[in-house]
Image 1 (cartoon, rainbow, N blue to C red):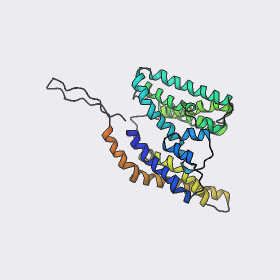
Image 2: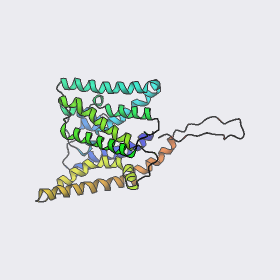
Image 3: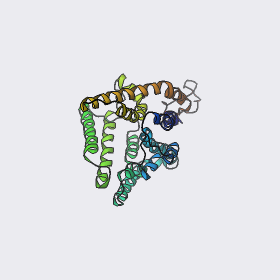
Length: 290
């Protein structure tokens, strides 16, 4: 319920806007088949079958994989909570095997890129990190942390700039991207670090930044034009960045925040029965989860 309150309000609002409002502003191709798939969180499978769509909502395909995880993972934990590590390792194997099958079948890039079973690596890595750390942080020095962060960024840069996400390269690109992201995560998890307010705020509105940035980039590309290509690129970048930030701020303040306040009703608190000892506190409460 907490994830639903975080994801669904903006997701469905933007999806509705992409269907009924954005076509008045941008050149859109959002077939009914894909619209239906987006509404039931099967968008990634629809695009894997047919990528003939060009919409500001296309960026939301990854939310479908996220929601599929949130729907299924609680059931897996309920029935197999003692086998979480083994299941996570199995997910890594399934992802690698699926990519081998798709590569051998000559699948196009979009059939691999949008396939849930071929994109399980980062989910499995996140599960393994959460299990092994169990709320702790790695005792790393600042130098080691910076080395890990830089290594992770370089891995992502190399993967995105030099490798392809189909063909034989897909057997290397997806695992490397997961390793790079995991390194960055492990080296930035610091519970005692002083918060950076601007970064904290960007983190709060990061979902809106993700949702709106594709629309903003396409909007600036269609409406911002000058004769000098360098100046044009710079102006398009500035307009897209400012528009993304503005829309994310407005969305968080007036759409997302009211729903986020409702999350308190679904906070899971672990407690123990009252003690018979009169000197002992009657309720022992752990920090809220989530």
